[in-house]
Length: 352
Image 1 (cartoon, rainbow, N blue to C red):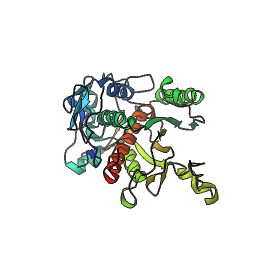
Image 2 (image 1 turned 135 degrees about the vertical axis):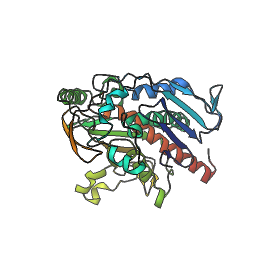
Image 3 (image 1 turned 90 degrees about the horizontal axis):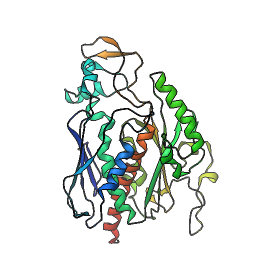
């Protein structure tokens, strides 16, 4: 099932961008964990559109409704269904694109895959689908906190501007969600310039998990880093993932990239907290390459379903840079992978 992720903590999202609602069913949440609606809503508020001039101006409240699985503020261990209604969709913005395959979008491949597609806002391929991921991720984070695991993320690059600091307290203090206040201002300028040109820019989102003990994850075919890679690449608009030293290690020698363990901790973390597919106790560090948003207002040549071509200018409200709103999504996918690994380790070793 392509809309489901996980083995013991199973997340299944549903809904289209311009349908009545989007949501998620989470099966495998441990019972007896206190769950506050406000904690889930807080994460959805970080993801929702219309937060600043740097994001799409679609105004969705993204108010979550919990339909099952929680009673008296405690998880029951049964499936948790959560719903968020779409209230500000403007499907008419897409009427002119009904028979057009927009460049960079999934229009053509969806038509080939299913023989039918929802052209309104991209349907299932829209970033709106990530609402369910963030709601599920909020549950995962609540459970992981009981094991001492914390997850944080931020935009560390927008086009050519890179963050040089990792002050995670800065992330929610600027609209770019960068952990570097100085770089955040430069990133905002780049994004605003792209919007004025009716264009878009890409960047890199970094996510870090602290407090993960050694031993989570399975070797060989279900490595923790492999699952994290799959999770991050399943997020719309992501085109690359690196863990720890990542691609930068290709320029170095093994004598520099071998992490030395002194019996208590690793002195470096080129492995990104994962050795042999298993967490090693160091921080887990993942970076995700986010492509420029495909919906732009510039005139573009697009193919039509009849086989011709047409010049289009995509109307509607879109993100000039996806990174700021991708941060909570990437954090959520990290949490979903980690809680699954935690539950598998508990079952394997019969430990809390």
